[in-house]
Image (cartoon, rainbow, N blue to C red; front, side):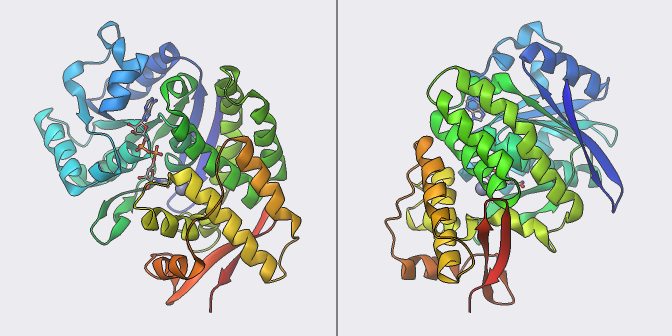
Length: 346
Ligand SMILES: NC(=O)c1ccc[n+]([C@@H]2O[C@H](COP(=O)([O-])OP(=O)(O)OC[C@H]3O[C@@H](n4cnc5c(N)ncnc54)[C@H](O)[C@@H]3O)[C@@H](O)[C@H]2O)c1
Ligand SMILES: [Zn+2]
């Protein structure tokens, strides 16, 4: 079994991120990680009804009454869901020695982590990410939280998990657009820190739309996780380089908003990366060919990078983004594949 250890120096926290192929391996691994503790599992309706992990539940060690199935979607990332998690935890008579288990995408992972940080002032959480995005990005690094009327992820806590378990079999039921959302983040990791990772992702496009693709891309999940791990280890609270992970996101969030969230996150990030590169070129910070290199990789995975919104509208929407620094909009601009820098818009 492949595994990566992540260490945060202050406070000293170390945990493993493990990579498994099958649900039977997950079952064994999860059982030994829970290790007799009282537990609650939080998932959503799609993961519960579509994945074989939950369909075979009667044969597993899991007790059905310990599973809380929430509605899927970003709209559910609210206080009311946190309340449901806490209520169910009290009903199950969980206490400080218990453990929370998130089995779902980034929405379930972020909410479960946040609820775990609140319950009895903090209980451990095991993250089992079930989307490509949550495996490569959201389950690692300890940012947890919910949305409110003022914006996304504005209320939350840093809550590092005690373990992250990524399982290839979860990818089998993921809709294509969710695979593309994950690819958006993986390509972003390549642009930020690794020409090799970028190249490896590009190579998997030979298998795009074939069954083989899931296995090929899952093999690259650890590479992507390592890039995020290296950044988080140096800067857990985003005082410095963790902000690089926002590449493509400042433009991207504005584009998602302008489209009334009809443009999927992966595509918005891809467009954001292209706009950041255009800006970088206009500031003489990178080679013009970088645009083509990026357009090519996104197109190979059928991610459309054409932007239908005018720049003044995008900039206006960006003014309301929380990633402003001292009132200025802070962008991440690529210099070449594997290198980025901060750039404050005047
Ligand atoms: N904490 C962080 O550092 C961080 C980083 C990036 C993103 N995020 C957050 O992550 C969230 C996005 O995560 P996401 O893209 O995983 O979205 P998601 O959790 O909404 O999952 C996407 C969709 O796929 C479904 N699904 C999940 N697993 C499935 C499976 N195995 N088979 C079939 N369907 C499945 C879900 O029900 C949902 O409809 C956002 O809320 C974002 O803010 C957090
Ligand atoms: Zn993202």
